[in-house]
Image (cartoon, rainbow, N blue to C red):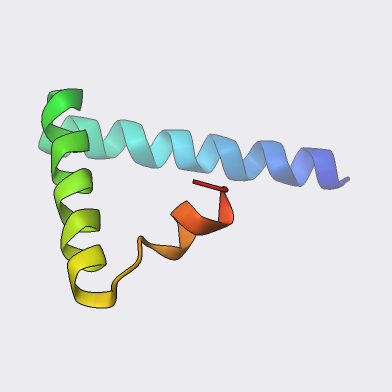
Length: 59
């Protein structure tokens, strides 16, 4: 049963992503990751550490 629920969640996420692509188009991955890196660098400058998702991944 849990496996089926996970599949439904993934399918909903995929459908949501497709609708967003239709509505907003897509963007260049390099620009996207540059913005994320800039945001993380800004957070690091404010707090002195990277975001919690980076530290939990062992980075």
